Image (cartoon, each protein chain N blue to C red):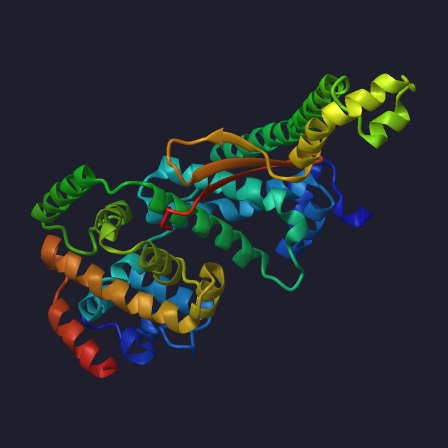
Length: 184
Length: 216
């Protein structure tokens, strides 16, 4: 059992060295292969450090079928992700279209109430009635501008200091939840 | 780079002489056969790491598959100065660590682990007779005593044979941190072996104290 001189000559540092001067992988492999084959040295090594027994574990061989299965799964998964990601811009465009449509509807709904100069310039002149509408609708028009420039509050929460805002900028929607009482 | 683009029918033979770096270059040209070759080359090692870290071959296979999906998705981000091997193992190890962290502690598995070790212990097999499979099973059972990072370091360094610098690159930390993790991991595993499987931990406590005083 104790006749092998390999460990006496080479030591176990190939396996135990944790310091920067790491051994070459080839030399480490030589030691591992020797320990796998030599019961005496293996016993001595494990007495030195029992965890070395785990360094002698050999990698599980993988058959061609297993590898082919992984290749196939990766291919399928990858392609499904491609389909997913190609769907995403479509749904984004759809969302943008919906937002634009909603904004247009909102503007159209406001049209009879508004008398702002920009709208007036783009509209057919309607004489005095416009002036009348102007004075009546000014706060409404102002509110519309405020709505477009200030973050609209979209939801009240039951917490008195909490508010939810939604900001829409082109195709980007940002939702902000503001609650000063939250301690993060 | 036309020379790197191969037909899928004979890609296996044509890639055999190519380096990992050549394969990464071909990946950047959307060559799917290069990915297939990488899968053939790297899967056994990745499966070993993932299985020993997760303790479940099914989960390990999932990690390996997702690793290669990530390799493909991020192929354009790969830089020539990086080591393909380190990069791929880094992806896989991070996935395995994330998976470990997401998984709840399995108390039931610990009970099973104890009984398995006692069963193996009772057979009184010599080390020479102890089969690879049994050693692997013992490791899977006692590796739960390690943190995610310690586990990754032990598997990569002590089992897979990566050197400290490589492990540091894979895990994205300093070499000194790796050495520290490995030292603690070995000590914890020795103690687990001593408790659960004493005949395979001869003189473990003495070795510990000698190491501690020596490294002190």
